[in-house]
Length: 565
Ligand code: FAD
Image 1 (cartoon, rainbow, N blue to C red):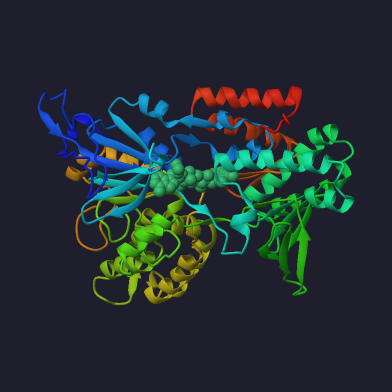
Image 2: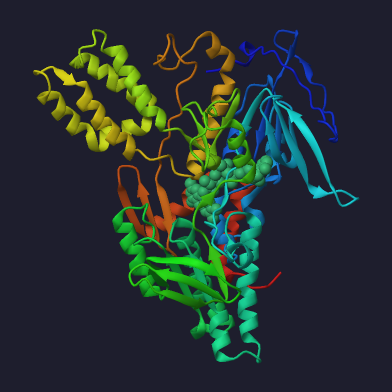
């Protein structure tokens, strides 16, 4: 792996104000390379975002020969898997965040952080335009531009409302720390308001009706956390109200947790039914007003109005406006996916130079799979016979698997038998019909879905990209990636490969379901303890680890805090 002394990179460092923008200057861009004693110019790497992808990149970047600038409106990293626990006070908000400057401080080289949001990316001049998150004394915001040699876009995504009227105005999202804190206050608000003597019974019932829209992992976990909060804490504090409380989970599809194994889905639906959480599937929200949610029921086609006190909207993720603008700027040639930035398998944004995108704002472009597979065949089928010898076929399969891990997983899991079958039944015993194989592969292609938008993917992509940056100079000289399909020679690096370590679905009442690699399913209290230990170990620092574990202990001993602060 990379040796920093080999990375004597030419580096140009300028931070300049653009036309009419406020300019600022950073510490000296030139430094002595201590190992060689000569001056080097350091390449400027700008990272947008301090979420899972950006922070993982920063933590794994070891080569000191880069000048790193981080720009993000949040000066902290948030451990999102514990956000639902913040909504009811099981865990305090500050326990799951790590100031980004704590991470920066531990780097052995200079890293600059700017609390600002990027609002425009200028690929022509290699600049990003940013505005400060805070107002200045004149009520305006500071704006500035940052030059880059390499740009790492890790801006994540925003909540998706599917343009449903009233959602932005009346619903809560559960995406950021502030959202979780707002939800916590709002739940207590509902209970205090419902306690007022002026409330009618009908009004009391409405206020204590909590609706969660979206039966994915976040919606389900939030509904479960809310139920625990009500049963374990609020029922004791508001004994006269406990029978008025209702929790409803609305899901447009046929089942909740439909990305999980069927056993987990069935267990979750049964458990929620036992707990009195009303799960309505096939229910599409069409409008949200101040007091009602309007739905269209798929089974009956009827429109239904549901009075509510608080609604949490958790139906997936959408594109940030700055990413949309950037995609428009790149144009049709590069970006056909209209939701997120399309990258190649090395996480380089399609049709851009020196720009990388990772995490929720990006996806690896699957359209290229068939084009590349065709190129592999053309190369292997030298005599243009339309068939391949078995040994060549094996090489082709290895090439495909090396380059497309998702295809490889699919081949191993589901399709390998079919290919062997094709192999035996095609031209003679030892040859394969290329066209038949390609059409089978296109089926594989259509079924190999994009990587999920999870912290696991984002963190692995951040670590992978940092590793590439650490070995950039070395691999320029000695490429170690797979052979190029189009053209000769090798790629510098191996493509990104995602390793799936499984997924948890906490269901409340100290019960968790887990789907682990190899389709191994585990459900129950012991899985809850596995969840505690995995999440405690994954927290980003010892400080947050100790805070979260003590929050869990505090909750066991004293219960959750219901003060409205
Ligand atoms: P984020 O982590 O969202 O980070 C984006 C960063 O970009 C932020 O720092 C943001 O401030 C910054 N930013 C935004 N706009 C700009 C701008 N204009 N300029 C500069 N910076 C900007 N995944 C799992 O694997 N397991 C789980 O259990 C799990 N639970 C979850 C629970 C909840 C409630 C939520 C909301 C998500 C959960 N996820 C989970 C998903 C996971 O959080 C995301 O997939 C992950 O955060 C994506 O990482 P990211 O770095 O792409 O984006």
